[in-house]
Every structure is written in C-alpha cells, then in structure tokens.
Image (cartoon, helix red, strand yellow):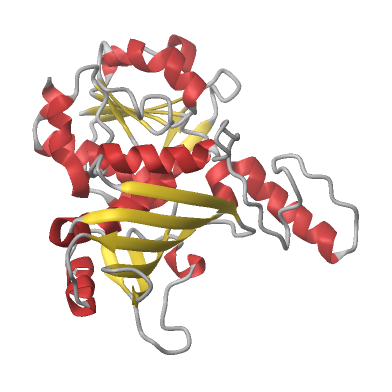
Length: 335
C-alpha cells in the first residue's frame, strides 16, 4: 500500500510520521508532499531519507491513502482532486460538517465510514477528539443530555509559530522586556486568553461552535453542548473541565469502570496530591486521561470530569492513522 502525507513538514505531518513509525500499518511506498517552498527537503523515516515532493505536481494516482495536514485552504484546493484517485484523510476543518464526508473517531463511530461518498474522511477538532472518546462509553450507558466544557488548550493547537512565540515571549517576560504578540490577540506568556479562532455573531468563537457541532455529528445530535475555549501557556496537550448531565442514574464506580475499559481512555483518579493527570504527563502518550471524577450535586444525574490528552496525537496524527487502520481493516481502501 502506498501512502502520501500532504503537509509532511508541518507539526501534524511530522507527528503522523512518528505514529506510523510505531504502527504496524504496511507501507510499500511513502510520499512526503508539501508546498514548493519545502520541495526537495529531506525527512527521515525508518532510517531512510525521503525527499519532499511538490504538491502542485504530485500524482495522487500513485497512492491508496493520502493524509492531508496542511490546513483548510490546501484541502479546499487539492483534496477532491486527490480523492478522484485515492482516499483522503483530512485534518483541517474544511470538510468536517460536509454531509457527504464522515467525521470519524474510530473508537466512537467507525461505522460512519459506510457513509463515505467523496472518498474523503474528516478528522475532528483536537479538543473534540479527546472529549468524544471519553463521552462515548458514558453516553452508551447513561444517555447524555447536556455537556458544559471549558478547554485549556496548548499553543501547539495553532501550529509551530505560536509554539515558538510562547518560548520567545517567556524569555522576554522574564527579562522585563516589552512583548508584542504576533500569533495571539494578547500576551500568552504567563497569561490565559479566552479566545480561539474568530468570533461569530452570537458571541461564541468558531472553536467553541466546532465542538458543539462536531459532538452532534460524531456522537448524537440530541446532545446539547456549550463550550468556552481558552488558550494557555502550555506547549503541548489540551485539558478540559467537563460537566455532564445524564438522563439516567449512575454510580462513580460504573463511570470509572466504563472509562477505564474503553479503548483509548485511561483513568488516573486518586484523591491525593498529584493523583490526577496534567498536560506534561499526557504529552507523547496515546491515551485520553480522565481525572477528578466526582458527582455534581447541583443537578440531577450530574458528573464532573477533568480530561487531558496530547492534542497533536489524539487530536490529529494518531486519530488520522487510526482512521487509516480502520479503512484497511474493513477493506475500504480498495474501493
């Protein structure tokens, strides 16, 4: 099987390569694809150097699966052209709400691959991906009515430039130097910014609306969700404070068991100092970590959770590769 990675020189593209290094997905030929600026660069994969191909001239008929990790504008211009020759797994937001494109987290809704009509599969928003993997086993047991989520999202969600700017701003702040923000609306070093993506007319940001809409498409359109998305001065891993109201009664023991037994989840919930997961512990790990599990006594059938996951892995690269594995397992890649 031949595979292409579009945007191979970016954060997520490189992370996809890292994931593929660890996975058993059989690859006959690998093509690393990027813009003309990166054409000719060399990237190592499994002790072999690969030269980056120019996206404008790349022939997608040479591959079975193409990972697109180069943003919405690139997906808009090239994904459907590529999909005439191969299956496309797109990490951008461009196709997520397209009714003819399944939005997939394999542990949650791999059956939706049967609804694929354009040879394109969408990867969800990084904050959605880690949330839905924790909600799924609980929804199956207790039926979720409503979710209130506040996110604490790392700067890597915005790409490499914001990561570099966090480091630069931190140095400037520690030396009492003037800070000018380039990739953020305000100073990010030693600060939090309650604003990710652009504002809509109703006061929510696009990031918050993505979570609302994507949860409905992936899990259940009857679930009501409201979100506040916040950027924090952390390099990698997103955290979420989640309040859930169920239709049915539950016990904390049932919740812990359901989460710990669900593929991709790991409960770390000791009610002692440090008995919970934080972004640093989640970085580089495949799992979605769930901590601070407790009842919300202010509403009927209410539950509070703390969820942490590596956004570059669970929210992007790992989920994309797991979609490819699901395609191969179900022989979709041959269509």
